[in-house]
Every structure is written in structure tokens, then in C-alpha cells.
Image 1 (cartoon, rainbow, N blue to C red):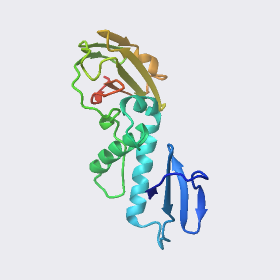
Image 2 (cartoon, rainbow, N blue to C red):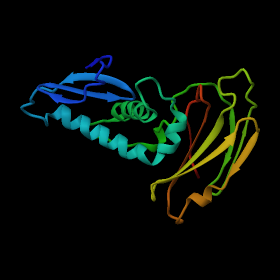
Image 3 (cartoon, rainbow, N blue to C red):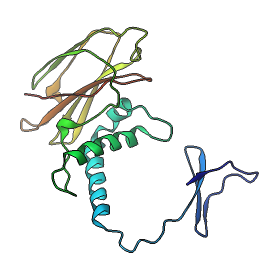
Length: 205
């Protein structure tokens, strides 16, 4: 694939012979059509499709949280970054080639590693959170703390947001449960427009 500057008639779009012109996020590019593949379902290709399918399906309910926890880079969206990182974790944990499972206890919702102190008192019905004040010089200054409760049974996410300029917050965890048999997972991370902290997984008793 090659980038190019548009000429007087604008960017080239469409297919001409074996060349395709298009644009993505305002960047014009051209690329050649892929060569014919005699067997598009080799074991490696099938395994990668399965891996991407499992990763995407597992992450989809968390889209809103991922958009806050992963800071988009040039050429990579928050979603692409989240898929790449979580895909690698799922692949590394696989004990059988081509067979993958999404482990919610290893879910990564944020790309950062900024140091952040959080105290949490968590039960099946509520959560009380306390954190240190973030100094104005800190990269998380002006950001928010995110507390995520995922209902595995219903595949629904409740995202609670707290201003880091405060010092504490509380969440009604039970409101995320629609039935007494529903299984819940909880996570937290802090993020600003510049950086994010590592994702913390919190088991719910």
C-alpha cells in the first residue's frame, strides 16, 4: 500500500486493472489487488479468523469503555488497539491451536500503565471507591475514573464515571443484575485525554 498526494482532479478512487484507490481518515492511498489464493481456508487462516471472531465478540459489549480507556494513535482507532492487545492475550492463553476462549478475568479495557492508587470495598450489591487526588502535573489530571460492571448472562455493561478531582464515589452494583442468577464482573481504570492507567479486575463475591 502506498500513500500519495491528490492531483488537480482530486483523489483516485475505485479499481483500475489490478490497482485500487481509496482513502481512510483523509489519507489517500493505492494498493494492488491481492493475488488469487488457491486455498483461502488454510489452518492458519481459519485459526486467525476464529481468534478475531472470539476477540471481537467478547469486546463488543465494552465498546463505550474501550473508547475511553484506549487512546487512539495515528492510523489506529481505540477499537483496533483494544482488539490487538486482547487478541494477543487470548492467543497466548490458548492450549490448543485454533481453539480460543474469551477470559473476562484477563480483559484489558485500557492501554495505559500510569500509576494510580484506588481503594475499593466491593460486594455483590454495592461498591465504594476511594482514590488519591491527581496533581495538576500528572498526565491523568482532568481525567476520570471509570468503574465497569459487566453482566455476563445478559451481556450488558454498566459504566460509571467519576471526576478525579473528587476523592471517592459509590456504585449500586446490584442494579446491573437483572436476575439473581446473573454473573457479574467488575473493572476499573482511570483515563484522561493524554494517558490511562492499567485495567484492574475486581471479583464480585
